[in-house]
Image: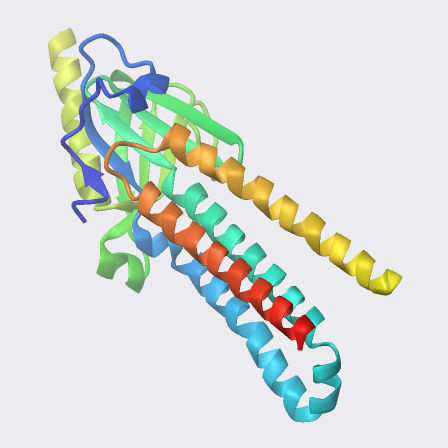
Length: 198
Length: 68
């Protein structure tokens, strides 16, 4: 799990320039999605990988002489198909892996990779935090210790969940590793900021 | 070479060009947004090696089978 939650971050690195960190703002945690959240896409990839092999195997059993006629086109078609499949897998992985949450002493920054060229960065000030909850449902999530982190805010939030409406915002991110620990960290940082303001 | 074969080859070449452009965009995306010490570069290298393996094996196969 340690590779998913990075705590030793040099905020002065050029890679963090796009976050526009305030002077003296330190990145405390860099959190990525848990790898188990990618299993569904990987399963789809494996099924799509096996599918043409099965088709060819059955086809050869039923009409072996037809296949030898179109051998070259079959090789071309297969190579094109697998090139597409690898590109699809790598794109999906980038989409998944480049969704990152940065927790600094002052803010939570949620970087959401949307496809090939779109990228959304939403942020939430720590003092706006009202409540933080971690939700782990299902055997897989409980076993691997990952789930959805929801931060209720005083302002507007970002959430894919249309059912959650009202004046308060909901800042929710799915497939977060060790969400209870992250929730506790956010609440402690919020408490610290509120105490400093008072 | 018949006209239909030329059309098939042209479509295949166009498809390969599209795949190349998409992979180049991924390449630039990785170098623009990767974070220090993350898994982007090793995964990109594995991806490139697999793509190259498919291209080389299929090209060799098509080349050799056309000679025979």
